[in-house]
Amino acid sequence: MKRISLPLWMKKLYEFYRDGFSQMTVGKTLWTIALLKLFIMFAVLKLFFFPNFLKTNFEDDKSRSDYVGKELIERTR
Amino acid sequence: MDLLNVNLVDWSRAQFAMTAMYHWLFVPLTLGLGVIMAVMETLYVKTGKEAWKQAAKFWMTVFGINFAIGVATGIILEFEFGTNWSNYSWFVGDIFGAPLAIEGILAFFMEATFISIMFFGWKKVSKGMHLASTWLTVIGATLSALWILVANAWMQYPAGTLFNPDSVRNEMIDFWSILLSPVAVNKFFHTVTSAWVLGSVFVIGVSAWYLLKKRVQDFARRSILVASVFGLIASFLLLSTGHGSAFHVAQRQPMKLAAMEGLYEGKKQADLLAFGIVNPAKKHYADSIAPLLMPVAVPIPGFLSLLAHEDADAFVPGVKDIIDGGYYLPDGNKALSFDEKKSRGLEAMKALEAYRGAREAGDQPAAEMHKAQLYESYAYFGYGYLEGPESLIPNVPLVFYSFRIMVVLGLFFIALFIVMLFFYRRKLEAQTWLHWLGILSIPLAYLASQAGWIVAEVGRQPWAIQDVLPVQAAVSDIPVASVKLTFFLFLSLFTVLLVAEVMIMVRQIKKGPEAEN
Image 1 (cartoon, rainbow over the protein chains, first blue to last red):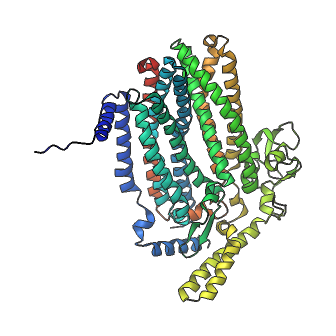
Image 2 (image 1 turned 90 degrees about the vertical axis):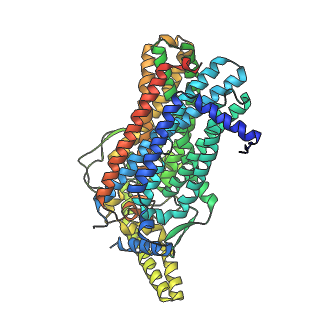
Image 3 (image 1 turned 90 degrees about the horizontal axis):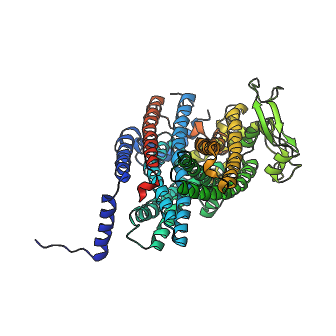
């Protein structure tokens, strides 16, 4: 199989991050927390609890603006 | 469902407030600590002293903990816009969209790129490159704050936009008016300088703990020196921007100022209140019961008038004046009463309805006429939603006390910085009382910071957008039970994150800067 050689700058960049992550101490815990938090936020909360109200209930911008316009007028009554 | 269901509005507001307040626990420390660690690294590069490097690295680790736990907590606010505040989101779409998109790009490219060099690059890049990365990380974080504060300032002072009755959206017509509106500029500097003060107090508090424990005393003294000098400079900038805030509030949100001062009856040569207790017996804005018990004014005649209008003789309207109208505004026009504004708001609403009807019927001349009528009264659009004059009054005790907490603590921090500097060359290590004062000041800094937001945000109620859209019109027509559920989900998530942050941070602080070697 033919080996793909990366440009030098990409190799250096890869080594920079590889060494940085491997030498982390408290950082590993922080990364775990940060990734877990992002997973909860985007894969659980956003997906199941925070649908975009207008995008979910209306198909296009015209019907969204009609709805909001109607809502704004009716709420004064 | 009752569309103006108080329960739904209150729960939606409570959820937004809770999310914003938790988010704001993380942000100011990032902004404040960021500058301090960058200053320390600059001192290291300038002097070559390893002690500064060790100090910079330690505070960077603390910065990293706060950054990692706090990052993206603000995105939840955007979730809430789309779900709980969909009318509002639609209404302001373009205004919020552009600044938030810029914020996202800046946050990603600047912070994500340079923060990795800052943490991983100590032995990989030159001193100068590393220092530049540290400063760029701090600048990136600060610029991220700029865009969200610009969006917030627009809600307090909607400038540079035009309402489009076809799309029912406010559209940006002048980007620079939004970015450089006096409210936005002042809000940015006031918020950032307050974060610098919080960061300084935090560094002093942690360093004071080391002095109390008789550990790493040289490190602690260095940190206290930098934080006290920086904190003092930031405090004086904060005083200046605080005055700017009061001035802008007086010009554009007089009800907020009246609530901050517990002022019901306006007056010329109004005094600034130093102390007072909000009278719980006052039930109505127009009754004759005194609004405050034991009021004590700052002994400078007309100081509130001077601060608010740059004229010690100027008239400062109270709650009753703002509702009754009839006084003269700073621009020379006569203030309208609540009833007049409500009437104009309803006219604007009728014009919007008529415009949409005419458009549907294809009657272009009538549509243009109604559009002109709409624009004539659009400045009062939101008043049509308010039931009575009382709904124009924010929670006076909350705003009144929060304002005083913020100001008194701000002055206390100035004293703290000065006292720390005074004792810096006078056996700082031996001043146990001062160590305790420094440690106990950390929660006070957070209290002051949160109090500032309460003044800004509770003080502008009932408005989501000043004079144009109140919260009851901005909220989505969704079941209140779902808002309650997500409120408690967020409360749990944020509490876990906060506990994690405190635990990891305390563990790192206990390890101390020695661990950085």
